[in-house]
Length: 383
Image 1: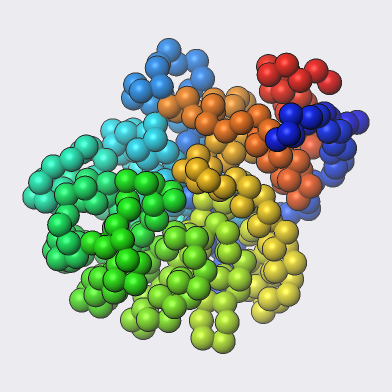
Image 2: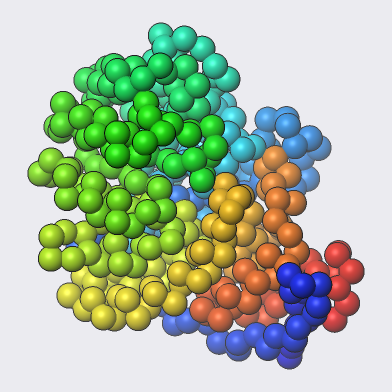
């Protein structure tokens, strides 16, 4: 069987899907690395809502996908960028997601960390921003989950310099009940975060970031770096206080950063580990045995797909993530909260399908092929 896929130049090419998926099996959590998959939310396709209305979520399908990730030993990073925070999922929806997912994690023994931000605000004073962070931190802690202090659009717009960041984060870290993960999300993921930590100069911003950590090392479990700059992550990783982990969020260079070097390695908190979950788990289990070569042989070939999904505008990577979840059979439709299924072109989605199929990511390749053909037919591509 073959499928005709549209290319970026407007032509159609014939692609022959593989017939068997990659063989992977569920397993226990890992011993050599802490690995979180930032998970997407599944929309309710039958809800009569507009793209700018509060999100309608299919809770059972959303939680089922988290159970899938936990079954492979992965942790779940909940209510993060991948869950469309600020791009279709508002704070009320995120709070409900946190409560439901944390309860599900307790029920199945899964690890979970949840995003804490200020997206109930569109602006505000520093006092209002701090209060918004505190409200969200309380929800996450009451749910029994680890907190991930996310970058704040409101703080980026209001702060006048590094001191405002030191004050806000210092206050939050002092009151956090348990060590948190600090998240530095670069402007390629969210343009509103340009100049975070008080400077557009990344060296100066890094110094401020490290000052915040150094002042409260007992309250920082780790840092998540999403700048798509491998060398900067390595340099920062080597400057962290002892006991503070680096969680890579670099969806372009994750195999080398997780494998590490003779001076250390990164753990992982990655959006690409949503579609790569079982394969990524298989790779990290090889690393658990000391088999770095086996780890790289499994994970290196996935980088082409990841770079494709996360190509500029990077913030629309969620569209490809949800497409692959639908094609893999984890949900029954390709609808997204906020109508974001329209954010990528048909040639982009076609290439995502071919790359994922080539990796063996679809448990049922025939189902994936049929669904991709159905999607293409909507856009006039007749097979």
